[in-house]
Structure formats: C-alpha cells, structure tokens
Amino acid sequence: MLYPIVWKNNSVLLIDQTRLPNEYAVVEIHRSEDMAEAIRTMIVRGAPAIGVAAAYGMYLGAREIETSDRTEFLQQLEKVAQLLRSTRPTAVNLFWAIGRMMQTAYETLGTIAEIQQILLETAQTINAEDIQTCEAIGDHGLAALPKTPEKLIILTHCNAGALATAGYGTALGVVRSAWREGRLTRVFADETRPRLQGAKLTAWECVQEGIPVTVITDNMAAHCMKQGLIDAVIVGADRIAANGDTANKIGTYSLAIVAQKHNIPFFVAAPVSTIDFTLASGSLIPIEERHPSEIYQIGDTLLTPSGVEFYNPAFDVTPAELITAIITENGAFPPGDLVKSQTNSMV
Ligand SMILES: CSC[C@@H](O)[C@@H](O)C(=O)COP(=O)(O)O
Image 1 (cartoon, rainbow, N blue to C red):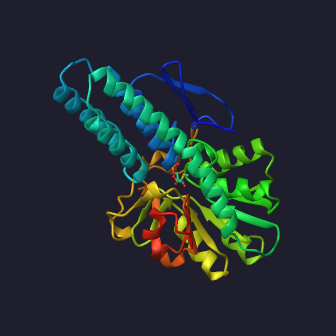
Image 2: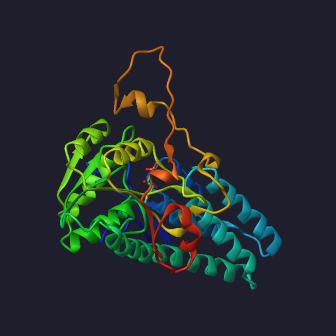
Image 3: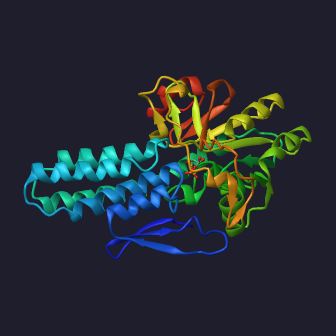
C-alpha cells in the first residue's frame, strides 16, 4: 500500500506530489514552517492528507517551543496553528486536525515534555485513523455502487486517492475496493486542469495498482457519458456543508450536471471530518484562488499572450440535489440526511 505521509526518525516523510509521475521523491520535514510551505506548495495535497500533515506540523511546532511555562507554551502553539491554518482555506480537514491538536494540548495536564509527547501520539493516531477511515469508505462505497452492470466503468476527477489521504484514498478507495471485488472494468480519470492531478496522480496510482485507467481531458467527460462509456462518477470532497453542498476540485460541478443529464449516479466519497456542520450551505464555503501561472504556464512554456487576465478558483461547489449519495466511513447517506453520518446508522 502507498503511504504518502510517514513519521520516521523524528521527522515526517512526504512523497513530493509536485514531481510525480516523472520522479518519485521523498521530502523530509523537520520544522512546522517547512510543513506549512509543503502544504501551501502542494508537495502534500488532498483534504485528508493536508489534515494529517498539519497534525504533524503542530507537533513539529510544539517541540520547537522552549519554555516550561504552560500559558506561554499554549500561546506559542496557537501561533503555529495560525501559520498552518493560513496555508489553504477550503479543505476543512486542515482546520479539523489543527483544532483536535490544540484541544489535546489544552486538555493535557503535565509538563511541557509530556504535552509534546501526547501531541506526537495524537498526530500518529490521526494518521492511522485516516487509513482505517478510507478503508471503511471503500467498503461502504462498494455496497452503494449500482448493481448493474456487474462490472462498472467509473469516472473520477482530480486525485482522491492514497496520495490525497494517509493511504487507500476516498473516491479512489471505492475504486480500489471495486477492483478487489471484481466489480470494476476500468477507471476514466479526468486530467483535471489546471494542475493535472488526474493525469499525473490518479493515473500514476492506478498504474501502480494494475487498475486499467483511461485519461481524458476534462472537456471530454460529457461526450464519454453520452456514448454510454461511464456507469458511475465518484469524486472526493474538500468541504461538505450541512445541507450536502460539496466543495471539490474545480470542474466537479459541471461533471455533476452532465452526470444528471445522462442519468448516471454521482457519488461523493469523504470522511465525516470533511463535513462542516457549522456551515448551512455551500455558498458559505471559502474558495481558494491560486496563482494565475497555473493557467498560463506549463513547465517553462507560456500558453497565452501577454495582456490577458486570469481567474483561477481551485474549487467549486456542487449543489446537494445533484449528488446521489455521500459515502463516509459510517455508511452512504443521501446528502440531505448528513446528520446521520455522525453515527453508524447506515441508510
Ligand atoms: C481525498 S481528496 C479530496 C479532495 O481534496 C480532492 O478531490 C481535491 O479536490 C484535492 O485538491 P488539491 O487542490 O489537489 O488539494
């Protein structure tokens, strides 16, 4: 199994996702500032993965604090939390993991060294739990898939795979489980402009696992659906509002509209930690805007003339009514009934 985030020899090892698929490189992170930069520059990316990375970032920051005074320690740890929170705004798992680490620090009584040790253990727990969560999502997703045809062709967008989590993946976790159980013919991977997570990362993961994969450009999805090539769409999520509206990689919304037009089920696979029950609807989800160079440049090649303006939102919001079900570690739920996802009551 592929593990993109590993705690080893007192540092965090990250697979550098900016270099795949051409180069498999591992980056060693020792300091919280470097973890914040790795999240910002997308060396590590994908909602659950940046949550786990931020949890380790909190520990790295905690061990840098040199004081024996508890109040001073907590104040400095809050600054580490602020730095990590400032890296990416949309994926709520980042804020969830940092919140859990801060709460652990506040609730742990004892010496600073003891708090630091508990923080390391909490980050390791968040890491291990995420893998188990993804495996459960895979199993519940398998149960939620259409029963016919017997073998499915699944379209996915961006990368919601092992690389985007601590291991196994969410949307691609369902694909993995379907492949294991003989319910999958192949995956269609949208290339996912502008950063190409589908073409680079999802395709790479599928090749590693021996899962047949066809890469298409984003504007081919409607045509493929019309031709009857796609049986189901499964995507991940960065933040799901209480009403089921779902923020995910830019391009997801148009995919959902086209899937509905062709009567193709559209699933979102995500851990419960991606659901933000504090937001009533998707219009309240903050959408990250990234640098225009992601649009006008590929490598050293400039794609557009000078004098052009750009708009580069990294995510869009798919309205709940376009989503067939949201698959979590606790089961698959209609998007209008997410409150049940907090317990094990499966629909
Ligand atoms: C399991 S990952 C779910 C989402 O985080 C994923 O679909 C996505 O949109 C990732 O965006 P990215 O900008 O690559 O971090």
